[in-house]
Each structure stands twice: as structure tokens, then as C-alpha cells.
Amino acid sequence: MTDTEFRTNPDNFCYRHPDRQSFVLCQRCLRTICGECQTPLPVGVICPECLKEAQQQQAATVRRMPRRRSTSLDSRPVVTYTLVIITSVFYLIGLIPGIGDVVRSQLAFAGFAAYSQPWRLLTVTLVHAGIWHVALNMLALWALGRSLEPLLGRWRFLSLYLLSALGGSVLTALLAPTQVVVGASGAVWGLLGAMFVIGRHLGANVTTIAVLLGLNLLITFLPGSNIAWQAHIGGGLVGALIGFIFARTRALRLQRRQIWLLIAVGAGLIALLAIPVLVYR
Image (tube, rainbow, N blue to C red):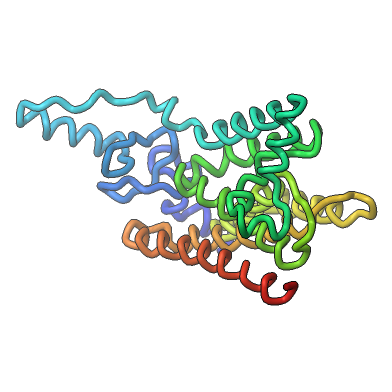
């Protein structure tokens, strides 16, 4: 898609704010709306015009519409902030003498221990090796999440984060089954991979994202970096795959297919965990 086609395609932008990209559709009129224009309802999000129409219809039947929530609150990346806070709290708990060592030992990804304690596949994102480790990961999560979460919606963003983390753990299990890994880097790489693919699909300029991916890849393989590159690559590949799924199933009629594809990705990753058992035992 050329830049001209991208700029003239209204499906890629909020119909009320043509300069804002979005993947979220109004559940009634199916027009694209940004975070500021979204009003959550039990059936999904709707645009201001459909909200006004619904209010008028209910007023005609002498029933009051539920009070509208503040759009400034609805557009906030709540999932992103929640993940940052939870991860930061667990890092602080890890600093408590005695308790911290136990928490880290139970949450880190530790090779074959993940088979008897499967929560480690995801809780690896909650423990970090030091202040700079957690600070850089949370800064990246905050920066990427503030752009991706309003674009995708909250449940899609959370699915992307968790499946990317799972992808990082699975590739680590396949290539380094005895390695102990900590950190949310795999999930963060998944966000980068998804943003790159979605940006390419929209025809946006993804040069900055490509540079960030290249620099991170270079740092990952620097001698003595002590970085679990398997988690980075696994998370990035899964994130790119999920970004492709989101880009190809953004229409309302394809939402059921989107959900099943995400379930298939998760099931496929879990199935791959059988390989280390067969190969290394």
C-alpha cells in the first residue's frame, strides 16, 4: 500500500479524527473510532453519534440511558498501566530479604520446572535481575502500550502481551531447557513485533520500529550480554504473528475467527512444549 492510498483510506483512521489510526470499530455503525471517541457498553464500544441515537431511542420509551463515562478515562491505556504497576510491585517484593528470594524462585522460568509449575511460563515477566532490567522493560512497555492499547483495544492488547510472553518461554524451553530466565523482555519484544507488522499493514512509516528491533537484536547477541536471546526472539516472532492476525481480522464479521486464531496460537505454543521432553529426556 502506498502512502497516498494509506492517507486516503478512511478505514485506517477515526472517522471523527482523521489523523488518528485505530483498529477499533463502533459495534453499531462499524466505523473506525479512536480511544477518545469510544464509549464502552455491554455489547462493545460505540461512537458518539450512535450513543446519541441510542439515548434518543430510549428516551422515547421513557427509559434513561446509563450515565456516559468520561471519554478521557476510557481512552487511557489501563492494561498497560496495570501491568507496569503489578510488575513493579513484584520487583519491590523481590527486594525483601528472605521473602524476595522465595518469590523469585517460584516465578522465574526454570527449564523443566515449568512442566510441573506451568505458571512460570507467564510469571517470568514479573521478576527481574536488577533495577535497570525492570526499569528498561517497564519504560518500553509504557511507551509501546500507550500507542498499541488504544489502537487494538484492551483485551487484544492483553492477549498480545501474554501470548508473546508465552512464546518467549516456549522458545527458551526448546533451545535452552536448563536455562533460568527472568524478565518481561519476551513480551516487550512481542509488542515491537506486532507494532511493526500492523504498521506495515497500514502503510505507515515503520522505520523507527525497524531500527529499534535491529538495535535490540544487536544488543541481545553482544558477547557477555547475559541476555536470554531465545525469549526475545520467541516473543518477537509470536508478537509479529499476532499482529498479522489482528491486521487481517479487524472487521466485525471476523472477530469470531480472530478469537479462534488466538486460541490456536496459544494451543500451538503449549503443544510445542512436548518437544523438549522427547528430545532432552
